[in-house]
Length: 240
Length: 106
Image (cartoon, rainbow over all chains, first blue to last red; front, side):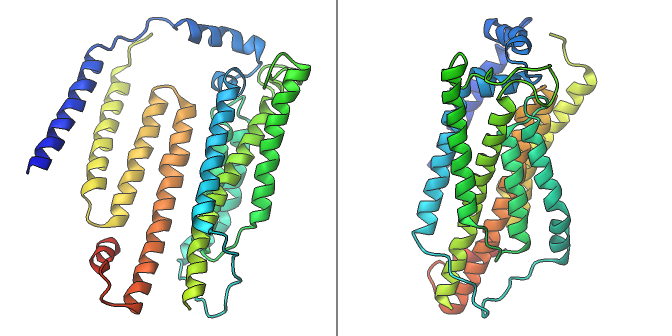
């Protein structure tokens, strides 16, 4: 009873907090100084049609590197906790294939290539259209998850995933360092010519960096999913 | 900045109500798959709201991770828990967490 009362009281307090925020809300009549700088200078300085991507990859590139690092550490910890150094055992013939619907099997066969293609499209066009490396990587990982759902015993090559992941991470940082040497700073995008606004090969190294981020994020999510699915397989083979 | 047109405001209110309803269903639903689907619906409506608020990048992240990947992952884990629950039930029927697994299995 007293627990419920405390919960209700907390809820009311949070509600009052948000209500006061809402009551005091006045929409800005114009962009503030930082936003105006980004809105006016992005097209000329960075050459990216999508201002959000210009901020994420170039203006705030260091933050993105930190974000990618956090995701990497998460994936590493998931792998560490779940895998516990067990080598993935080959499937025993006794292990029954869990029943999945005909609809799921056929649908995944048809949809997975399209989903992967969409993911690649999203991160390759990150500087032109909404979306980018993180979104594209997540889409790729959901395609992988669909494969795993359709065939729970499917085995992904961990070596391929880790090689892809570390290579794209290294190249990401390497491009950043090259920016210090040959352009005006770490992760500066003017390493390559900026080109014409709105073309695929424009905005300097932004498409390259975002593609690398997309591959890295996709590989990290996929490795987490693969680890999650394999811990169960190893358990089962031990029990049987 | 322009104020929103009545149509957009109406759609937004409708979406917000849907979101709140789905959130309540996600918490109160007895059957786990329905709760998972309702949680996915909350994310989906949130991503539409982000689109209404003119932030397509955030909307894509929400749709891909919140609505897509998380919902899939919950179903994935649910299937695993069910399988593990069946295994446990076969191995030792009077396990102390039998009641817990029953709640998940419904």
